[in-house]
Length: 366
Image (tube, rainbow, N blue to C red):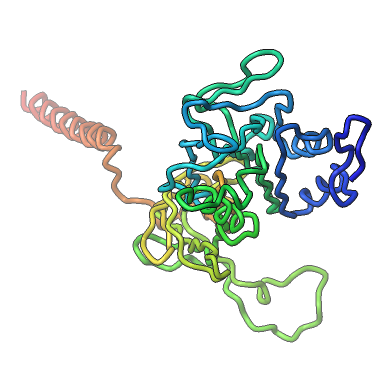
């Protein structure tokens, strides 16, 4: 590794550059970056490219929880599908020369996996840089669609053999969980077999029934008799959207998943309706959706993006047709005042005719 006059590294191990590692990350690769107490400039630049800022001039300190070579962090953020195994752990050992991290630059893609206890603080030349539970020790970054994942650790001691000793299970559990997350053996979900049906069980309407080819000469335009079936629902129908959500287990097999915060929307250009999905069992999630009163080609879209989980996007075309002339209701309860007014007008007309005839006969007799 090249060193400068002060003995600091001027390049990453193996001759790698920050741009090369960033390109690997953007292409969907997984990156684990372990820094030291005085992280070299290439490591700081690489962390910044990933969206994590390393306060290289600051050092974390926690005298209330000091141990050999560092301090004992008692606050572990257990993110679902990322660090579940650490939730029951008492904490993990962090090196005394660790530099605090900042994941705010990564936006929603940045995850603060481990924070310090309330008695810790980070100090630098300019004073206190972070204090309490706001000091981040381990950060994770996930790509949007590429599937890329990265982990940045403030101090390499937390991943050393010395920190995995007896009585300190937090470090081992954390790194085992992060290793599964980095290798896409955890935190990966997918949506399969999306479908839309009527709530009352009636099948969808066939707009253009498929017919056999008549054998005539080919024309310039598509012939209706050879068109594919196009099924549609009526505007205002009560629909049910169903989808199977699966998660990848540690052995790589897909297993049914239960998600409680997913939504489906019926959208044309903008969403018209949005409904929450409920787990119906065996990974199947359903939502009751009322078809909008606007006919046209819609898309039933499921977009799920949560911290620590891969992003899910499922789109299913849904056609809505207008109401036919013979499908309107013959009596509208909301129009009762109009019906009453019409009946009153007829009654008044009959009364007027009766009075007119009665009065005319009386005049003739006189």
